[in-house]
Image (tube, rainbow, N blue to C red):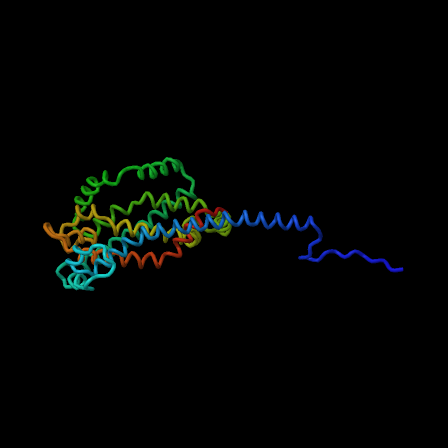
Length: 308
């Protein structure tokens, strides 16, 4: 006499009405979970596209206008294609009538020098405020944060008097040194240093490493994304500065790019194509810098929300 053993339903086989109902419920719930995410994603991408167009279109318009003639700019300011296509504006700038490449060099040297000083001083101060223990540390950090609430224009006259007494007027030091005391840089790096794990430093101290060695060989290599981000922000702040160089730079050949470009506008007429060509030339180094440091900036933003 043989007995039949019940076989278990294989995966994918329906075992009855209850399983059908369960599959239907799972299918419906899957639709409910999937549909809102899809709609939310579409809305998010639509918003990103609109914001990107708002940011990119003015830059495209500047580039297109730089290849137009003055007559075409006035008669068809919003046309997409230059009519006729002209490189006269770039030829005028490169002819030597205006020392735009000297302004470009001055801006690059001043921004680079200020960026290097900010990275050195801000990183050292931030490490002391984040890792070292000393009396009055919280007070010092509070005073540094308080300076961020003061409008920068208030420091215009005191900084001018200091630069004048030091004999730095009409020199690169006048546009590099005063802005090198970056309270934002200290705050930014201090917040990043606090998020670094203490175990690495403790292990280094057990091996006999001092504070300076820990700072140079451990903290700095781990902080490359934050340092790169601060370098880009500091470079852009000096590169785009317009007000301060006007006060301390007296000779036309010693001007930086931003106040120099303002001289391309006449008192009674403005050659818009030349001005836009100058703006395009001014944006090229910034775009190159961002392309080089883009990966580090993204890593800095991504690591800012990770603690461990």
